[in-house]
Image (cartoon, rainbow, N blue to C red; front, side):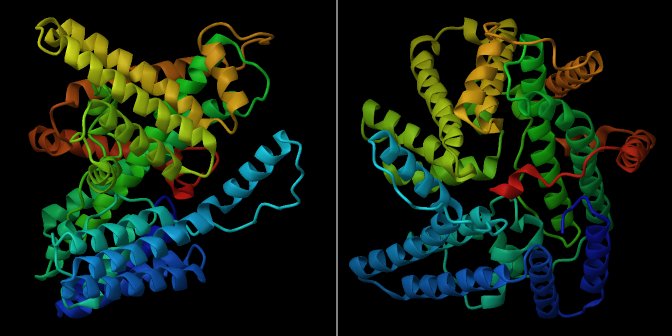
Length: 474
């Protein structure tokens, strides 16, 4: 079941109506938990058992961590939780990559291995709900939170359907306190929640799927060298596609949660207006970047062990963050590029951060554009299916593609990509230090109504291939 389907519209209407009719808060929570399992079962029913197993296992681990006082016993129990959670993730997501890599490495040494890569179905959302349970047990281990007494509350935290399959990655410390008291969305929350869902569907259906995805596919699905214009149009189209696709999903998730009176943290804050890469990761997939910072980077030592170790910790975090996205070495390269950007940025800030000129408006605008272009280069590795394809596209971006044929993209594709890119950059730049809530509060009611009506018409009339949300594969 996907947000951009009629099935989901019927589903959330039924869930919302029944939720509001139930008078007991306990009954409402059980209803939401059951609805979340139904939502997940719509993908692949057997994997509901895996989700239930993970939930129950880490619940008892957390309760054990809360009771134990011996540091060695607590550490051992935490390791059991990490092995279970990460073991399942590695088995389902990375087994094929491991076997393929082992076979390729052996082949380069002249050794033939007869292993066949396992053909496993990846449980949808496993990367997200694994991070939910991990953050819970780690926070209990650190005594940041207590597991509480309600298994239903914990299970609802893990499986809450708006954020279950593609985030945002929710922290127990943020969500569980919301279950202590009855929650009922006000009329304003319902309206703003529905508006969020409409905005998300507009971004996904009308922009990402109908306009940008076909252009990115035209370039990245062509295995021959492409010309420079086509390479740039394909790269910019994918930069827009992945933003509108994932930010669209996140808006639907936040809006769906609002309809039940819950608050989820924002996952995006106008990332293409970032000035530098530290700023980019404070604005892009915020729930993942903060998770990696708090549970991986800090655990590795953060910046507390000298300059060289800080750089190693930073690179390790970004490489593993890249691998989290998918079982391919191109994702590792994407993470390594971002790690390199962050390390270089840190050195430049040390050299020039005390000067005034980096803060001049013209310089900041230039830095924003440079950041965007360099981020787009990393998207080439994210989108490419192989290193050879990525290097062909990168070479074409630099105008050095050998044997490139004629222009792959059409004039209309150039116009669409350029227009959406410029509007996105201007919009992000304008809203860089603001929020959508501010904008909607200040806008006249008539303007808001016209904008919502326009988005609804665009969603209804959008044509093109129906595509799953990109982050469902992670």
